Length: 346
Length: 72
Image (cartoon, rainbow over all chains, first blue to last red; front, side, top):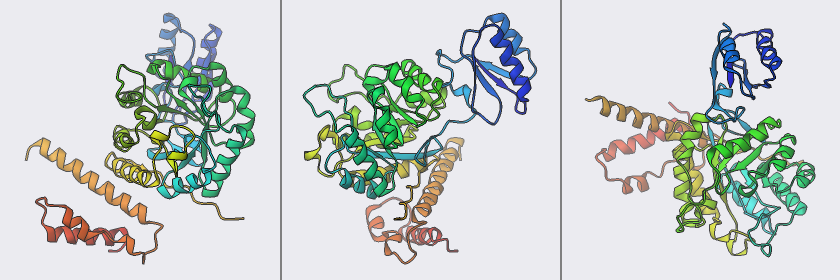
C-alpha cells in the first residue's frame, strides 16, 4: 500500500503514521518525493489498520498498486523519476540516445567519435559479454571497461556497460562507469541486483527474454529497495512464436508503463529486430510511443565487430535516428536532450 | 468548423511550434555566419507539392531562418 499525505503535512505527522504501522509489524519506506510526503508500506496491511490510516485527516489517499512492487509504483512518486547518467538526465521529459559498439574492441575510440558526431548522448560498449555460445567472444573484461571509459572521456560522453557478476563491481567502480547495465539474461539474478543497488550508480535494467511486466518491475523493486536512485527500464524485445525477427519489440507496454511506474524507459530496437534496416523505423516508433531514450549499436566497421555485427549501424544511420528522434520528440511535446559539452583539455 | 477539425488544427499548430523551437535550440551554438543555418529552401520547395502556396512557403522559410537567429 502507498500512503499519500496532504501537501504540507509535517514530518512528525508522517512519522506518527509510520510508527503506527511499524508497531503492527508493517515495514515502511519513505519516498524521496519532495512535493508531498509519500511512503510505502511494503508488508500487507490488515483491513482494520488500513481503515484507521485512511481516517487520518492528513492522509489524502492510499493506493494499492496492481503488483506487489511498491517503490517502482507510479503512486510512490508525484512526478516521473529521473536517472542522472553522468549529467544526462533520463526521464526528465527529454529524449536521449545511447549508442556504441555491442562489444568494446580495437575500434572503440573511432566508434566513440562517430557516436559523438552522430548526436548521441551516452556511449555504450560491452566489456563482459553474456554469449549464448561459450565459444563466442566473451569481451575484454576490465581492460574493456578502461577502453570504454577512456573513449567516453575523450568525446565528453558518459558511459554505460553491462555487468554480469557481482564480483565485477570493483572494476566498474574503479573505472567510474556512469551507468551499470543489467542484461536480459540477468534480469532475475537477484544476488547481482542487490549487489549493484548499493554501488551508487544508475542502472539500466533490460527486460528478460520472457519476463512479464510484473516480473520486470519486481526486479526494479530489488534495485530500488537496495538503495539505487536511478533505475531505467529497457525494453529490448521478448521471445514470441514469431521467427521473422530475432525478438518481438513490445512497444505496447510503453504507455502502460507510464501509467503504472514512475521509472524512465529506454527502448533497444536493435536486439529486438536483429536486422539493421529495421532499427531506424523502430526507433522512430519508440520515441513516438513515449520512450525516454533509444539504445542502438554503432560500429565504424560492422564487418570487424566482435558481436552482433548484423544489427550494428553506421554513423550516417545514427545521424538519421537522432534527427528523427528530434522531430518525433518535438511533435510529442518533448525535446531531444542537449549533448553534453566536451570538457576543455587540461 | 467541427470540433474534430479544430482539434486537429490545434495539434498540427502545436507540432509546428515545437519543431520551430527545436530548430532554434539546435542552432543555438552554431555561428550566425555559418551558411548551414539557412533552410535549404530550393530542395524543400522542389520536394513538396501540397496546396500550400509556394511563394508564401518560401516566405515562411525565410521567417523561420530569421526567427531561429533571434531576429525580429
